[in-house]
Amino acid sequence: MQITQNVICLEALKYLSETTQHKCKTAIEIYQDKDGMRTDDINALAGQRGDKKGGDVWTSFYDKVKEVKDYHRRFSVNQGMPEQQNSEWFYQRAFESDKTDTLFSGEEDLGKRVDMLELFSAFLNIKKITTQRRTSFREATFVRLKKKSPDLEPTDPEVEQTVQKEFHELDYIEWLKTFDQFHDISRYAKYREKPYLEYLEGLIGYLRGFLLRTQPLVNVEQLEQQFEKEFEERWADRSIPGWQEATHKDKLFCLPSNKLFNGEAVMKSYQTGKQYKKKVSELQKLSFDEQKQLVATTEEEDKKVAQLESRSAKWHDLLSDTIIETLSFLQKKQSQTVEEMEAEREASDDDEDMSDGEDIGSGAEGEDEDRPIYNPLNLPLGWDGKPIPFWLYKLHGLGTEFKCEVCGNYSYWGRRAFEKHFQEWRHAFGMRALKIPNTSHFKEIVKIEEAITLYEKLKRDADEQTFRPDQDVECEDIQGNVMSQRAFEDLRRQGLV
Ligand SMILES: [Zn+2]
Image 1 (tube, protein in one colour):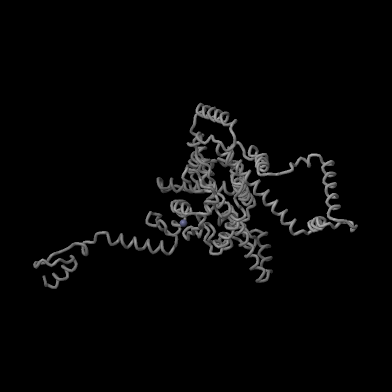
Image 2 (spheres, protein in one colour):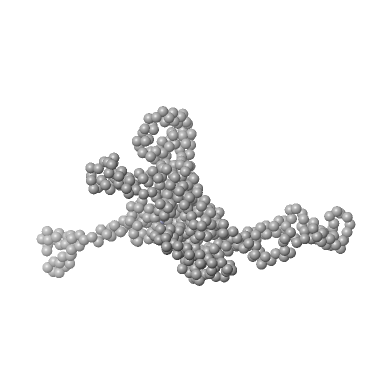
């Protein structure tokens, strides 16, 4: 129940900090005295009366006393507010506003796991992506079969039969593992594709909301500013994986219709049509500046998609521990028998019964020791094995940014994430693009130039280490002088040894 308590406490803290800010604002307004009420009050204390009739300190004082008494006669219990609002009172209010019960779906289990089935089905409903997946599987199958029988034609029924037998649709677990690898999706399925844009917006909405629900104190606006800043930089130097090339430079792109095609044949047949000719003549009527404007619009279109992808990837990174936890949970469920599931459910029911009667803050902690610790922000673990508080994380400078050029100037926050990333897909992808094997020699190398230089040096070293008899074999002449075989041969040919 540690997690529930964690979320409840954070919610309470959020309530308290918001209330404090609200009170401070009111105090500032009172001191600024825009409505003049404070001045009136002070004047009244000094004996002045609002109606300008004569009076003194005492008459004003008794007037006030009468006013106060009247007020309390009319509103008996001060509208339900106690006379004094002390810290205890605010503490109680903070926990009264707890709504964690309704905050999470059953699958999310109070924020331990993500529940993204809806987004998964939105993904499956993007037709171009599903078709693309099947087509590439078919192509790979053909290549594989052709190795065995070189005369095979792509249209051979054997290819289709094998595809029928072996192809399986993407499942939830596979999708959850890979949904941040947007560069694997072809541009054709992205460019001016409303379903894809909506899917990305859904991803961002869910992940951002999930983080807010589990970590209500995190300053998301600040995070988002960081995301945007980084994105703009990476976009400017065209270093985002999958977006190095603009759509309008693709040879399957047709500017007059602002359309990206899936294959040459489809494009050719489109270009013989009437509609296309009309579009071309429209384009020709445009001025040079207007044509340039048209190209700029396609770039804007690219940027919009890339920006949404990069934002989703960032939220994904922040929640990666929760996503990994979800994956291992799902994989475990998949391998469990019905009996095991039943037994586990019963055990967890017992658990809840036991902790029901307990106060917040006093602990069921002992029971939770074996459970994975909830840590959506990848905070480092403290001495007690639990994530350190967010403010401490900031204090320790663990919010430090590490940029990696190989990853397309992607930023990693904190040493741990940075070190881990050398084995992860984004870095591996960058290295593959440079045609350099991602071996341990290249750990900690983030500059493309350095990676290339090192790779060349390693290749040279490897060359030198291979055995070349003319240089590496040592010979001795009659006097006992040691030299390489080549030198010996030279001397011998000249008749000197
Ligand atoms: Zn990297």
